Image (cartoon, rainbow, N blue to C red; front, side):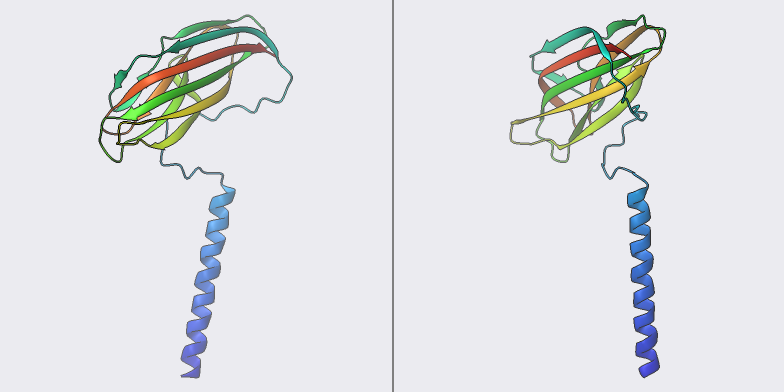
Length: 176
């Protein structure tokens, strides 16, 4: 009986240590635990000083129906990078979204540059079903090559669609 207790305690300790090891390794991997898995690419780490070249401001305030999936909330904005070293586009987006009464409907915000989801996408959470709205924001810094680029903001809705009450986008163009 004493050997059985010793074996059981040893197995419990080994299982606990094994689980803790894998939990720490998962934390070190830097993987997000967000349920929103946007198709974006990692944002660049931009530490150098930059000079602001121009700013584009776009906003709207109509109650627009959004289907499930990704929906553009503004028209593409053309930005021309004339620096031989390339540029950085800083996209600042906020949106106010409400559900169409379906529970479990989640949402997020993303940025596209040249038709590709770029930088990070923000998972916001589950939309309220009581007719109220949620507001969230996203800031992205995206490195681009010299030339003309398009930038556009998108809202993601998981299942039953939603309403976009209003939005605001500010796109800054910087050179290093």
